[in-house]
Image (cartoon, rainbow over all chains, first blue to last red; front, side, top):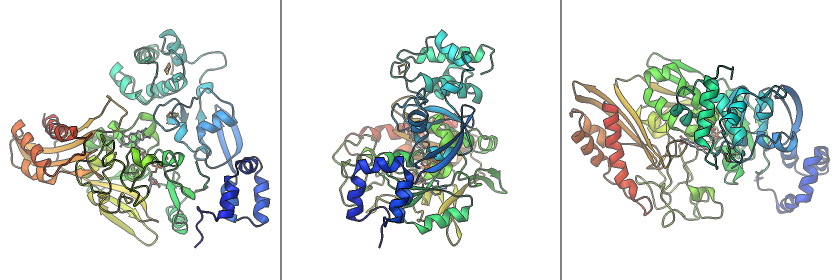
Length: 204
Length: 324
Ligand SMILES: Cc1cc2nc3c(=O)[nH]c(=O)nc-3n(C[C@H](O)[C@H](O)[C@H](O)COP(=O)(O)OP(=O)(O)OC[C@H]3O[C@@H](n4cnc5c(N)ncnc54)[C@H](O)[C@@H]3O)c2cc1C
Ligand code: FES
Ligand code: FES
């Protein structure tokens, strides 16, 4: 029986040729032509890019991507929005936190195609031009970072934490910010920043 | 990550039909377990059928309980007024799981279906009977600190990592499953499996079946607590966890429900301990006695020896916290 995920040896050796793969991922029509020339339809199918329409930081994007691209890789590699960081790439650190339709999620475990028709906000979309978001200001004022690598994720998470109503006490902030790991251990200042931003009277 | 095809399903029927057509296709819900496994090359579906648009995200009160749709996000269920009012044990379990971001993504159906797993399952360079039947178990005789103390087999000693499922087991929930032909219902406690000689099967869902909801019957459990013990205060899998639910009247336990997580291949119901608690005074002596009974038949594998001591203490502590 034909097994769609175990191609026959000739196809497998074809698949192993990374140069061929790279060429194909850049030019999907080439793949379609290859399919017409006798490659298995299934294989043509899996290499095909799919359309994605998504609003990122207020700008509507019409994209064409492979199904396996994560939202994180789409943001960083294709849209060059490198503010969102890749820490673990496995949902364990929170560095990749962004908002999808207002909810904080790990973009490393979000397949980009699942954001069709949705609103994505990254750290780049938080400020209004040169005017920093109150949470960004609070992180600066209270020294909520050292190396800064986790910071975009911390700030995106912190904004959601306040909006969700989960920033009422320092203990609650600790619990509801636990999805963001800080390798430098800036935690106590992060809690101060979140509490102060919350209490500062500005709209978060 | 391997290449795959991607389809969005707009109806339940279409989702099931698409799955039935391709034996290597899988449903995609929140993706928090599946995408992770795909990135590590542990799971390589030919096609993902995105079920995020299916209208299965409601929480509704029925004549006899609460019906929670399979696509309800863990965070939404945790905060829902009806869940909080009727099943605070379940809210506690939800809030103890993963992180706020992951809970925003993770669905009820996906949480049930997340793989029973261990580091050897993830490491494709190591043997694992669950990942590759017949290859051996790296954890037996290997590093097994997180592993099972109940119901394991010579083939597999991994544990089911869910918090939600432990509470749903204690709450006698029922799972509703839609298939290509008909709908069926299965008791939550019968959904997951012990490893036996088929550790590759975590549960009794068949290919082509879709979880549509869980139903939790109303109860008279007046005193509940979900105790999760982990290596850090938050955002970590359970070393072990205990869901304790009691009906206490005038200091006497009328009914008891107990289940544990992090100790077996499936959420582990402590039936004998429950029986031992019934009719007893709600005090330390009863709790410790029940905990000792619950531990009968437990065995450890070296690095997880500590669980033999931690588990009874945690059971007694969960009962104590529930009873106050
Ligand atoms: C870093 C990290 C920490 C975590 N910590 C915890 C924790 O402490 N406690 C805890 O309980 N969990 C924890 N988890 C696991 C998390 O809860 C699960 O990954 C999540 O619940 C899976 O749900 P999902 O919707 O994302 O499923 P997906 O990843 O989309 O799917 C998982 C599986 O379920 C199948 N599936 C999904 N929906 C259905 C359906 N309706 N019918 C049939 N099959 C379906 C999919 O095909 C797939 O096989 C953690 C995960 C990560 C990454
Ligand atoms: S990069 Fe996504 S959680 Fe670490
Ligand atoms: S500031 Fe360095 S990781 Fe957090």
